[in-house]
Image 1 (cartoon, rainbow, N blue to C red):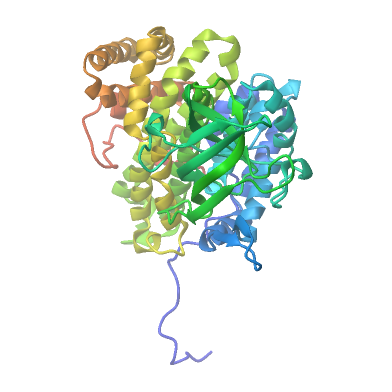
Image 2 (cartoon, rainbow, N blue to C red; image 1 turned 90 degrees about the horizontal axis):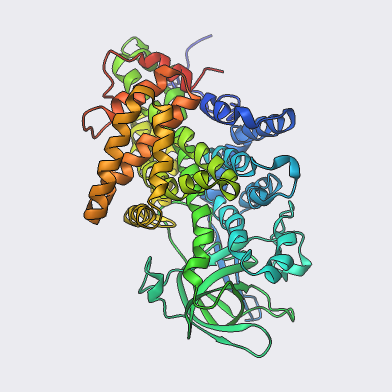
Length: 548
């Protein structure tokens, strides 16, 4: 065939689409972490979920939901207040899939066969879903965590729990009692206070109908199309928690006035808003004046989800980089075979494996905490530390993975751009880094035995390096109590040490030892790719990301 003179080049040496993989069966750390919890049915369910979230369809739904962002509709055509948000059908498709999978409620599943593993199995689903799309996980996380707060008000829980645990997604703007299923959002922070919710000015006054009337604002009002919201407002007794429905019991629309949607760096598929309350009706949750303590019941669970979602994002980004390196030819060889690139990928793989092992171990602690004091202490101390390290590690790792793709990673056609914009969110949401460190310090002060619970596990699982690691943690803890400004040193060391112990339980010895040598015993480093010739970098990559 004659050559077309108008053809300037052929497209070759480009990476094929990264889709069609199974995020469960192809993840050896995740599978190993769950091994003792699986039966044939749960393994089949997780394998099916892993197939979907690694599919072309899931990637396309994620792209569409983030390209066609939510739209605020304050009024209808006749001028009546609506205060609704419209979403692209792809967002609803993602929500429907996750509701059917129980991401919004399965930690509270009443199935007795799931006792002792509800949190861990849900954690695996959330971790895989985050590799597909994170924005819609906001209402999933808040709804699941809201149940912890509602348990402090049994009458409210009795009314709302059956609606929450439904596996049917219903986005219609109707009163909750007319819907097949509901979601719960929250509104805590205000313009002047941010993290300092005790500085909130929103007020609540008791009504004569069993509800309170709330007047004020929220600077961040998450997922405003939820059916009800946990909000904080001041009463004469102090900050108090309330459940505010979108519709009042008489069927009228509650007096929530959405001011605008936030124009966010990432998390674009999800709507976040500013809101004013004009005497909006709400029910008391928990004890009046104990709103902060009530909300903490919910926040602890959302922090676990932040760490899980960030671990999922880390794996998704590195997966893109490894896939690219396996197909791209540079200087006469595939990128994966270029020694420096191999070490960069292997170095990142260590953090991904450790983040996966740590978050899944933490989820298991949540399962056992109600009946096991040591597990409760472990969860109390490790939750803020895990959120701190995993969420802070994510932006740097996602950037390095993006660089592995070169210019192809920096354009919007690549999912790397969306992953990079999403990466900082979990470190900020539900308590930024300093807040997590203060929470670690608070746990040490209120429950000093929590460090003993962690050290016992570290010494058991780290073997010969356990005693040295535990001494380092004890010294850091003493320094932290004496000098709170050093809390970041302890928090990071705590997370890395526990992650190393977790890796020893679920990964091959070579993987765990490489992490221990470079993270606990290695020199200070600011970038990836610092592995030396002692470590089999190619084997590390092949273990973490086996070729399908």
